[in-house]
Image (spheres, rainbow, N blue to C red):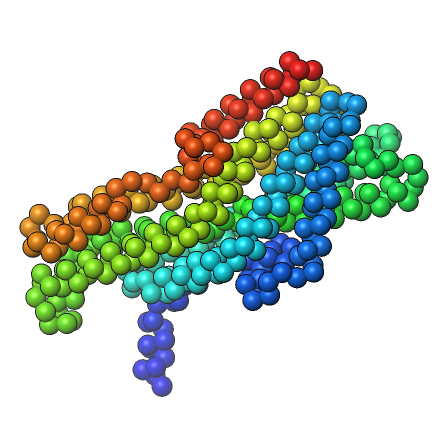
Length: 399
């Protein structure tokens, strides 16, 4: 009994991947980890119908609005709700591949060399970062939802102005009585609740990129210690040092190929997300900033606009920088393979190194389908902000 207890104490803790599908906002929109087995259900269809009606109403209101501020507000909501519905379709269509990726990350973390302090530190840091990001997204979109729904009514009530205001100033359908006002208010509040939950789902893909990046870092650490691993393998399996080094190199290449395969399986998801963001976000930020720049706003609109702009700028920056970090890990693997002692090894070892270096010589960039030369990088983030400023100037000139 005492020996079993000692073994349990000395055994490294098992790692389990952070799965964003287990969070509450995914359960609220029925995109949780039970989706692969559940498939399409009536609650999911109901959410899609509500969001499509929101999109149609916003688009119609944007065209028939008589005021520029009202039209831009409806156009902004149309764009953002359209973008929010993307993760719903992505998660449903790719539900099986997403489940496989999470299982792969789970299995890879459990099979990692946890006895190595460096490996354990990398994986623990990745888990903490992924969990922290998901908590932050939950709080951001929770606050953003209540700011969108309640900021204008509360500001109107506090200043003695009209407090009966919709979260989004629709020009259609008309509201001529108390009942129609509250029906539209409740419908918008429900639609915005689903949109903010899907916005959190949209951003939660960063939890996958953080953990995939960590697995690439673990592989790089493993390749750098190929000599020490070869010595241990030769003693364990009673084989020569050269044969042991060749065996551990094969294991590293297999691990690398599995990582790349899983990354390429979620690449369409990431590409769709980045494509929609590259088209929508500059225009949405310009529409949000226009009333603030022109000074045509109330206190409630100021609070909602500033908060919403901050959320958009932070989310775009997070996505671009994290996707760039993940893309560059492929070339980091290339340098790790190059720094192995291949020059003093046999022909077979050199052939394997050549194959591995050929596969890893280029970054795996996430490209926008709308702009073929646009990659998800920090430079692209800066160009988003510049494009928003240019669109804002164009709107001012049109006005």
